[in-house]
Image (cartoon, rainbow, N blue to C red):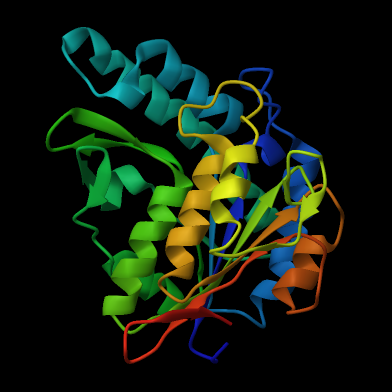
Length: 279
């Protein structure tokens, strides 16, 4: 990883909230993870971006109003507002946790810097994020509802935000080297309940087939969505690690570049002939 490269960290919604209980955050987990990030942020200033899921805050509102399927009429508009408000409420808790831990967070709501078309992010306004990085602030974003050119509105998961950011940052010569995905399991398990330590082109389809459903209400796809995103990022040269955020110190060690248990989705190095190899 070069000195100029970036690290993205996602705090899963199932990690920082109880997804079986609407509106219930895990305050102690949020505070501990904030401390681990703050401890690494001085050394990583300008090279770290944090995102988080909406968990039991945004997902139930989106599901109740069908916002994840688009907005068909005026009756669903309140669902857009409610989903946005609930996601923002959890975001405020996460940002406040970073601030209390001694970091310098800078809040970035996807609904204010990006839009979508057919459910896919488009039209990113990247300048606020770049300025925040240059000023050694800690950008913090999250899964949100965004306006959509074709279907009125769409749910933009943190995975979708990260994927869009990786592409946009590459064009601005701000490469992302790795993504740390923090959840409440050791990583990805196979059908027999064994930890899959490495995901490659050879076993990706099999691992995707065994990926479990998200606990509680989730309108974005849970672990399967995360794996698909990690695989897509691997083809762009970005490493991913899927890790257990409930284990104290694990995020801090991963941020420091130390080996930790989990599932590694290795970046694919593309040669001049277009062939890709895992590194």
